[in-house]
Picture 1 (cartoon, rainbow, N blue to C red):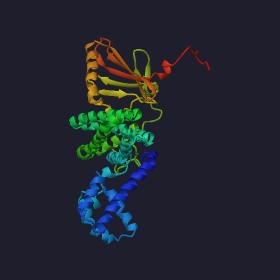
Picture 2: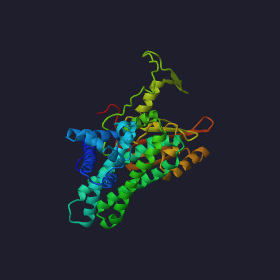
Picture 3: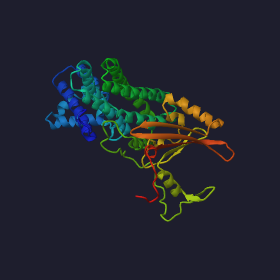
Picture 4: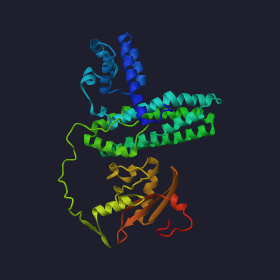
Length: 413
């Protein structure tokens, strides 16, 4: 897998491999292999299987010559192996199994991650540790770089799914899970550095522990997180999650298509605004702007802007052309504390407390990341009497500014 970078190819490989494994298990049943043995094989290779996949597998067996009657004869057995009743497997098409549905995306990514770990990264890591003469270092680093795609998987979970969990009062699981996600991120970075430094002794314990932690998180997502949110999230919310997910991106594999449930649009059909109708104006202390002009100005600024009100609730962020940090619409109405990993919450609350008490009006941080020098500045926003109204976060890549020298006159070449 490490040599295959194209997402579409990875998607196809993942799908075909699942189909071949499923067909192989049914053929073993056909040949009289003990169902309990096949069930163990299923559990070793799958965390779940959709009714769509089973239907596709059965169709493939028919096309390859297996009589329909034989598949029907085995129906009770393979339905038990696939952890569902015959009715569930053959007559129900669950919405979360549809192409592009966020749950299906999570499951496909988890399968791709498991394959990457078990088929590529683990054997290469073992060879690297135990056979220093093997020319495998660069291939191992390629796999670790591909594994870092997990950051997008976790970011979607944290920034798109967790806000809806909090809406339903499920605040503890997100906090715990986010903390472990960050531990995994750090562990992957450390593992990569150990490989670069050829620190094989440290890798002997660090690498297995890291990969085990990743697999445990996959299990928690499959067996705890997904069943929990499927119980409460509405279809409207899943649609918003799917839309927001696209901004962050996907891990190793991408959805084969956009999810489009068979339903009437929940957005409705508001009356279309006449093209020549005025937007109306927002009047300021000096001058005024139409709502459209104001929004376009905010989105044209070469900075990321986020505003939280006096109750620490996220009320607005602009849509700069090239965002530095991902923001999704689901953060609107969410407390800023829940938008940060647990270990950062204390720092956030201390800063806000200083702003509210009037101890500070501004605070800046700067970091090197992704070939950018990022300046993050927080400003306390106050009314004309000095009363705290909220905090404005402004983030920008100032690498180009720091590199400026001499002078350039306006309109100069």
